[in-house]
Every structure is written in structure tokens, then in C-alpha cells.
Length: 293
Ligand code: G1P
Image (cartoon, rainbow, N blue to C red; front, side, top):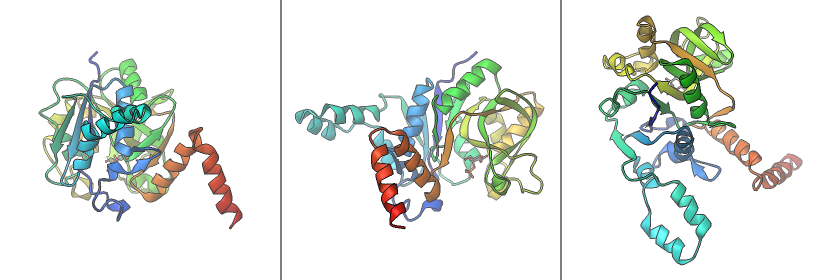
């Protein structure tokens, strides 16, 4: 079985749900805790054994490239002042030479199109796909949980899934479930953003995938789907017909949609609550505002 060593991070989106914060800086650089969202995603991938990081970017996203580069000026400054802990922090955000690849998505044509932009970089091996605005706080990193599911169940397309409210199914890719064993299920089909009146279930894809490299044969058609975009989800059904299964994995952990200010706020509160250094301060502040209300 081939190891999952490459991850794709689509970071070309305009972040319109979080304006004006994302007007001049990428939404993936929004901070949760002490790190930008994209670093949370990259570290999650590192913990799952990923060695090659492909970022699908667009204009105005150079801050992401800079974030994972060396910053020699800052390093020298911190070294001279013996700020070892701070040095360690910036080194954690540095990818090694040759590990990071940046490609531009020239047209905003959707997730399927973003993944397709990396087609010449993926050989015959499965790869991970992480959508950084979905932040997942869990004991075992979500991508590692997916890699384990892939190694236990064999080749196919995998996605982390969760139950969502009926009113929200039209925001996600939704599974028509065939059968489920423990936390892993196979799908008869997957439908992008269905109407609540016709949805086959409330089991929704969140932004973590392990994909079979043959997916490129299917997104190559560049057929437009819901929202006039090339939908990644639309590649899965013809693959299922060709006996390449689609598996959903109910993950352990909590997912926050940090592409919205509400989700981002929740994520910061959850993050601070789990951090022993920040927790007392969080409780103090919440208490203060609760009392004054
Ligand atoms: C994308 C996918 C969708 C998935 C979602 C998870 O949608 O197309 O299938 O459920 O991410 O966040 P988007 O959020 O880009 O509309």
C-alpha cells in the first residue's frame, strides 16, 4: 500500500464571508490561538507523516509563502537577544527547502479546479487535501485519523464527515450512505450542496480528504457543477461506478468553520479553553462580561 506523503492546501479563495478582515490579507492567515489557520493545517499534516506541501494560491496570498519561509532578519535578531523560545516558534513554521510548492489558481473555478491545478505534481500515489478554514481540534490529528482509516481499508477516496443540521446540508457535500462499520462508511453517491428537501442524509464532508490519484482523470473534464464551479464532489460518483469506493470517516474531534466570524470566534474560545496558560484569562474575561450584562 502506497504511503500518503503529499498534501494539497487550496488557499486561493477570496474569503468573502469574512470581510473586511480578508480584504488585503489571506483568510488562511487569520489567527487562532497563536498561529494562522494555515499553520494549524500544515502542522496537522506533518503529524500525519506528510513530507510535501502543495499550496494552490492566487494573487494577494504571498503572506502564506513568506510564513513558511525562513526569516533570517528575525532569526538573527532573536539569536542576538538569546530569545530561544521565540526562535523555536518561528522554526516550527518553517518548511524545509524543497518541501513547499506554490501554484497559482488563475481562475476562481472552485475546489475541483484548485485540486486539478496540482495534477502535474501528483504521481501515482494517494494524497491528502486539507481546507485550512476548517479547523479541527482533536486528540489525534484529523488527517492522521484519515491516513489510519485509509491504511486499514485500502484504496479509494476518503473524507472526514460529521452530522450537520438539516438546515445546513446545502453548505456541504452530503453522503448517500451504503453501509457503516464502526466510524467508517461507504457511500452509494455523494451530492454537493443538496436541497434539505431532497438530501439523502445529514452526513457532511468536512475539509479533510485522502484522494486516489485517479481523481485527476475525472476532474480533467472541468465540467461545471453547483454554483458554476468545478466541484470535487462531482468526481466521486463516476469513480464509485468504476469500483473506486468513497469512504466517509466520522472523526474524533471538533470542527470549526473559521471562514466565518462566528466559527472563528468559537475556535479561538475553544483553543484558549484547552490551553492551560490562556484558560484562566478566558474565564476571567467571560465572567467579567457575563456579570456586567
Ligand atoms: C467544500 C466542498 C464540500 C465540503 C466543504 C467542507 O465546500 O465542496 O463538499 O462539504 O468544502 O468545508 P465549500 O465550503 O468550499 O463551499
